[in-house]
Image 1 (cartoon, one colour):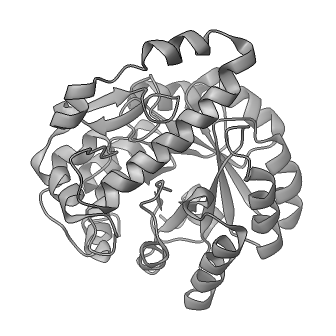
Image 2: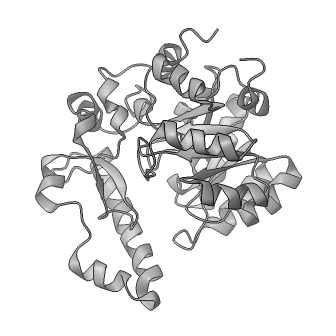
Length: 317
């Protein structure tokens, strides 16, 4: 792994990034991941105010000298994005992961400060754009990913990206075991971004019912819903999800067709969805929106985060 490009770029022992997970990632998880020899990132949107965001960055820096990242939603659905970017640059985070928009401004402001920029992509067309802008690495978000998944199967997407670009590729989706990690590397990925399996970490602050759902349900129980963020999102198909369906309601579908209202509606839907996810993830509620990817198939118990990492990297030393 010493010659692995992601390990060299992020100064880590193993080519794994603990993926930024909305509401789920926390300071303790990031620190434990970094101290286990992998990289970690968290979403800036996990913090309501810039003060809280800065406090989180400061605490991580006080507990480890290893590089960590921040995920930024870089479109108009995130009105906090300009300030979040300024804070990342000012405080010198190790890397930024951009999602759902153009990384142009992030690359222009972050790279001169030595901050690496990784960009989520779901196909070759979008990858061409971010590579042309100067991305340091691309994160291949496949159809096996949790959260906002792509449409192309993992092996196929990695192959397409490898054939067209020579910058590092991080595979996102479908990794919960050491065998799956090795498989992604054999496909040509330089590293992997792993999320769902870490929700079942002892350090994760979600409710016990959320963690139990990860154990009780399997890959076939993960569905896409358009009801939460305006963009299809993977959730566990609980009885509540089954009862309300996964398609946007008729009013939302009508307004989405009108350019004038589309952006503001998406913002409203996203804010409402965030609140619903938060209530379900951290409180006892029958309205159970549990965001997860198909890799829940391999979650059998709640474990310390360092144990999860140790199991993932078996055979890489």
